[in-house]
Image (cartoon, rainbow over all chains, first blue to last red; front, top):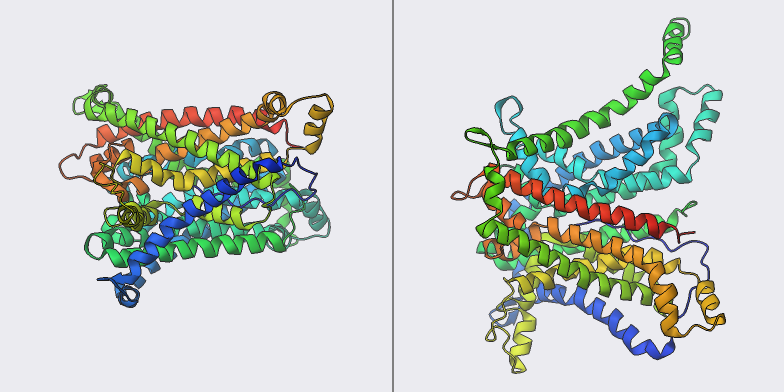
Length: 276
Length: 290
């Protein structure tokens, strides 16, 4: 699972080459093929979730949403997501700003963080963490604390990209110097000058983190398992005894991902990216 | 605030690096505790067996089912990287240069690339599983795919499933490169008398190739490290490294953390290579940006 935000097209759109109009059939086939490929499994989910013995019914939706476990486990995921957002975004925003201000040599190094989840995917991180944190002095396995710590590491790249984008746009150095010369204290500069500048980045980073945590399965399975059931663990468990419920929940997870993507588009549109 | 603050200020002024370092401490500690040290301990653990230092974990991963799992994972990842890479690149070119310019498709693509995991596996089962709707549709048309040996719980099923996120991911990775392709580059080629084939051979593909290779390397890494989708799709029926690791850590009969460590280290080496390829390709691709 990788998070890639839809990129806004370059603001100064230079004329691009046109494809030969004779290729229109292949162009259409490719685009329609992609749309069909992405939507056909969703149709499968919907169909499976509304059919009971050849009849159409919403019974599974009613039952699935009546299950108190659903609210508990979705709540667990949301809670882990919120904690991760707080941890990873405050850390990223602060550290990036600090690096911009005082340690520019660190920026290329920080950029490497964005490649982290490809080198250390969830499986590897899970293998590494489960062994360190299961021995007594640090026995955190099974607690949401460990899960949030792991999520904070894995989601750093999303937070990094989002915040970095807005920091680049705002001229933080000049703003900080201006605020300093007016006698603002350091905390005041960070909270009242810098934070409003990077707010859109923080929000879109937060949305990406939330979407990731709500769908994350591997680390939850490795690090907490049944002692802190998360939403994806619940979906996977439901499949063995009530597959229809699990289809309903899978559909819900698709809707949530859509909502997040849509919100991201809205935010990117409303805040013109001053810098590319 | 005023009189007592003076010596403190002068301390920060005299030793500015202390403040600089202090500000970086939280991130540093977090990465150290939750990433660097655990990974180092994992590497150490992979070289240890019951009697101390040993290569036995690695030797065990290079034969039998574990070797097959490594090879299968590499093959499937390569295959989906190439398949998704080609489809995604072509779609990106059509989107950037063709008549379908809008944000609906990129948004749909980002949803599909981000979704994945357990729900995707179940959606695929509901589509081309034993009782999936496409399976039923085809069998009503007289083509029973399961009678002909197809099953979704197989490498082919996994490839079809991974393509669901690889294709849109490549589309998103290639779109910026395709959008930055200048019409003047093509006009220059045409005014020099280049044919359509010559344009692609000497201009189009050389400019897009670094981005393509970089994207394909990320796709490879993406498939190689994926666990949730495969685990939910078929569990132990698939012989993949990530599935093996899951059973080595979580299984009752297979429990063997040392072996899991060794497999994880090997994964990290392969993924590191993929990311190096990505970095090099990306450097070259940037020459054409702006």
